[in-house]
Image (cartoon, rainbow, N blue to C red; front, side, top):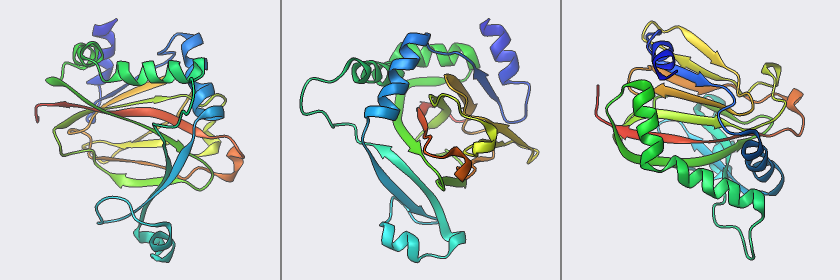
Length: 217
């Protein structure tokens, strides 16, 4: 199976592969429930050619073409008492993504020279949220991974991830429930998240992901 996935990974100029039904169903349901029904998020705004976040006021004052992103970031420390079973499932998953076994799995699947050093984050997008084209280079980031956990998400809701390969061709990834995406952060020439459309209603696009560090190409 790993050989098959590696063949898919390298079948494109911008290597990537998707793994459907990545988590056991019970775990995926627990984590999804936590992220959508229980978790607290804070809004995050960014401007093009400006490092780090900016204030909402500065973002709204900027010209539309200079707005780089708008989404929400999970507040990681948010429990005053005993966390729910769903919250514990999320914490366990997040910790697992930062372990040597996950990095080893990703290295075996992709054949990339990865280290055992991982950055992990959790994000939420609602109607109007977006992320403009950029690359995940720097800080030794070599492999990007994203696990989508929104049930019932459809392409017409927007929020699709677009990968741009070495030929400038685009591949559209619909953030389907329990789908894990892995892509080479160095070989891909860029990616962006299309705006979430009003058709999504109150449905949230949630994902857990990050980067595994490794040797440069």
